Amino acid sequence: MGRLIISGGRPLEGEIKIQGAKNAVLPILAAAILTDEKCVINNCPALRDVDKTILILRDLGCEAIKNGSVITVDGSGIRDCRICENLMCEMRSSIIFLGAILTRCRRANVSMPGGCPIGLRPIDLHLKALRKLGVEITEEHGYINCRADRLRGADIHLDFPSVGATENIMLSAVCADGETVISNAAREPEIVDLAVFLRSMGARITGAGSSVIRITGVKKLHGAQHTVMPDRIVAATYLAAGAVTGGDITLIGADKTHMDAMLDVLSEMGAQFEFGENTIRIKPLEEIKSVHILRTMPYPGFPTDIQSPFMTVAALARGTSIFVENIFENRFRHVDELVRMGADIRVSGRCAVIRGVDRLYGAHVRARELRGGAALVLAGLAAHGETIVENTEYIDRGYECIEKYLSECGADIHKEA
Ligand code: EPZ
Image (tube, rainbow, N blue to C red; front, side, top):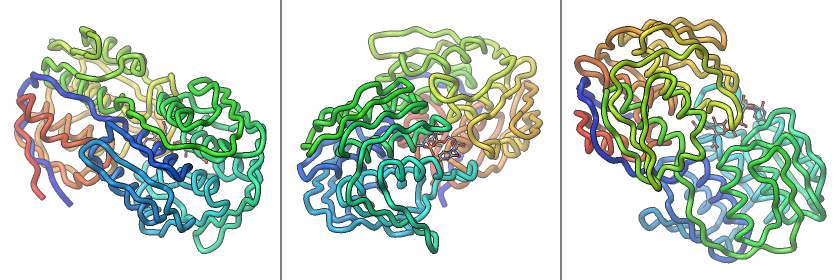
């Protein structure tokens, strides 16, 4: 497991080009197997989860070739409908292949997915929806065995606007017989990006980005090209890095329209921004103000994925902030490590009370999941002294070359294998 060594206390200054969105590229790569023609996906981020997804594609018998940020997928050779357990366990997004494999092969055998340990992360909503689409599902020995001689459109109401379940339904319904209506669908921008790609393949989808998505099944999909949207969570993480170091950072290629809730919170904390054509600049922040109460919600509410990096900002604020984590039941795993660095944070259930302190101090800390690991990196950038962040494999799942981009903005940070 790798580690990051950070000497903190230096204001960051410079520009960071924002990578393609992890949570958009993963379902889009799964969607590429819906056709036996070639798909070319541009602006793919260099992430462990992308590499694992390429292995799944190859495991299924598809050709998947990465050339820089371009991934070409040729699904004509798909020969298997089963994903081996060690690949399924690598990440949560592997479950998205279920819908895509069913559409292409009418069969699918997958194990329960993996992913960051931020909660139970059941897939009951996925399976309930697939059964409505005519899929017969049995579960045995940890494997989910699906068969669907015919996928038929259905009206599906999601009890919770699950991102993954919405994506799985879309991938299962695009070639089903008839119309599928998803109500209480997830509205995340990554859902819209997936729908744009599917439409470019010939799918008939309307309403993506709203709570009601309508899909009319078509006979066949064709190959397409797509450029992945920028990663809004990575963008907000780097803005938070500017905030905690009193720095001056300009993001290149971020899409402000996806970031309202996050920008509002940073503004409430005292941040000031300059917006260009496709740039966002955070100006040096004299004093961080506390947030009265922050609640994570489904989009367009405040994203759960940025809760932990923003908690590092709140840890250095003047005053007390309250964070309520409404999406996942175990997403405060970074708190103990922040407290070891001098933060004053108390957790009770889904609430964290953060009393701002004047400074944090370098310490030897451990990333326990992706976004909590990013929060510890931000704390190390702000802290006095040296911080060692262990288990960088978690961070590499979602942040492309984080130490490179930060050191190019003046951070004293390097990685040890
Ligand atoms: C996606 O996860 C993202 N991952 C997560 O990002 C993100 O935090 C999450 O959406 C919410 O925005 C990817 O896109 C790869 P959900 P997903 O289904 O699809 C419960 C990151 O850091 N639920 O919207 O797994 C679930 O337990 C990752 O990049 C059920 O109960 O999220 C959770 O409490 C972390 N049953 C809530 O819904 C189900 O069948 C939201 O889950 C499905 C979900």
